[in-house]
Image 1 (tube, rainbow, N blue to C red):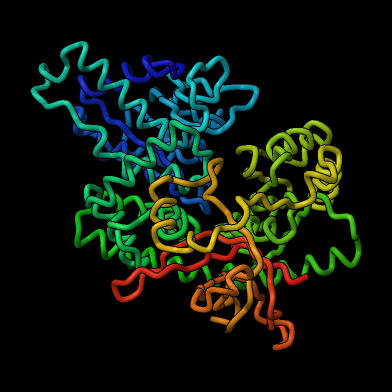
Image 2: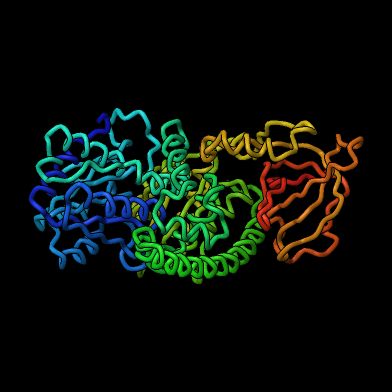
Length: 531
């Protein structure tokens, strides 16, 4: 109840339930938005709400958040109350327009607010001014989960469950959705989020989750009983996200709401969309690498990188921004054509540079270039005027240079050192798995050491599949370890360039590779140093 506005928001929901008002959930087109929407749609009927529907904006037609255009589209359903999930804190015009139409608006969000808050009936956001909630790292589905907890508390105290002749809902049953949204949104796993994720993963492992998550895990080749947090981020998340990137997140939300047979059909559709997304991303990445090569030829001192191409897909620019940031260790903005006269961008940053603050500084120094922006310290989005692209690119580079220093721009790899020979076993893997969940702000242990390359081959023109022998294991002739290094090659290197030397120094994580029902130790290689 320390979340600012949560009691007011819960009472608004309670009034809507008692009057059987028409409640419209307005979501977002990423995994956090999808899980937030699914949580509201699954849970509110258990509180007695009978008229609950949802609307998620298509990024290509409406853009992000509760826009005026989206409210106009919603008017045909005559909602009495709009509840935003994972958006709304920056939707000043959309909220104002909805209120003018006589619709109450309840904003639930976690994104950083601007100087002006929307004039909603209530706002629940741990990052709004004067909020005393201890865990500021909740994602959108986490905020909605806490609002439901507050609603249950108030209904319990007022005897509402008895009045409505319904049982109190067990909200722990929805922690699978909370875990998925929290991991996929890459929010820091503080103590509170780790508890939410840990309990959600337990439910998924014991088949106590919605059929959609199970179906997505199975089409991704994962066994639900053995999943860890990384499976939410690298297997389930991208398949759900593909719907919002290439088509309409309604497919993803319906998968999370569906029963078993329908859920599996939708999961297959999402898997197909993800394969298409990968193909588009590969083409965009190749173009980006060519641009980067040209930029580096012209300028050796790159600080903030901005790239734009008329052919780039708006739904994939966020992924490409992450890839370029990882390669260059620089803040990156990737841009694609938006509405007429506008360009849309997705940004990713590096530790030490708050990307939203960079955009705010550019907006103050060069008013009129940026149409709108929002986001977090490490990830943000913006829209600029097409005529202002060159000016924005220069301003971004200059502003990053102002706030950066050599330490920030020099990539560092922090490891837990070398493992002892006896620690290379599945028992160590299980100890590490049980010590999770690992994730943003609470990284999985990373080890490092010298190894002899016993054998090597390239998979799919970009991955290294290795057999390694620890340098310190000369006396243990039988200690050979499998290693996999994903996405190490671009596909155009010569055979000589691809060949690793006999001795390498790597950083790696321990992993259990499952094949034909057997688990074998495998090193997931993070970096390879050949010098």
